[in-house]
Each structure stands twice: as structure tokens, then as C-alpha cells.
Length: 109
Image 1 (cartoon, rainbow, N blue to C red):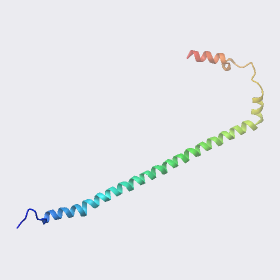
Image 2: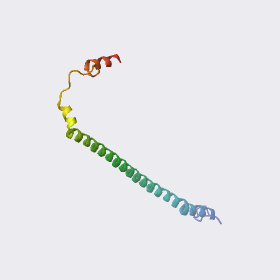
Image 3: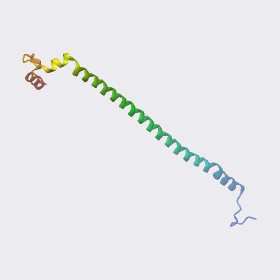
């Protein structure tokens, strides 16, 4: 006899509940855990990549500063450059170096 208020479940209903509790819920939990693990891994990779880029740019800037230091040391220590820097420019410069000719050229464009 079947009773409408009885809590006895049919075999099909019990199998559905077992399927939900033992298959669907663990798969959902695993999926959520894997999402957070993957998110954390992606964040760590992004941070690592950013640090690599920052270190490379820093190294490039240091190399440029070192090269400019070498050039400035060459200019400051080389007698040829020092002699030319100490002497005033001669007044008999070609017209292409005068300011008025430069202004005229700029105004033409």
C-alpha cells in the first residue's frame, strides 16, 4: 500500500538523490576549487612576468646610463673635446648655422 504522506522513496528517486550527492556535488566542488587554483596560478604567473619585464627594463636603463656616463667621461677627459669646448665659436660660421637663416627656414615650412 502506498501512503501519500509516507517518506518511503521509490528506487528511481533514491538513485536520483544518490547521483546528485555523489556525482554532481563533488564535481561542482572540484570545479570551484580548480577555478580558484587556476586563478591563483594565473596571478602568480602575471606577477612573475611583470617582475621579469621590470628587471629587463631596469637593466636596459642601467646600461643606457652607464653608456652615457662613459661618453661624458670621454668628453670631460679628452683634450680634443676640452679644447674645442673652451674656445668660443668663431663668428665666420657658414650661413646655415646662423639663427636668422634657421628662422627663415622654419618660417618657410
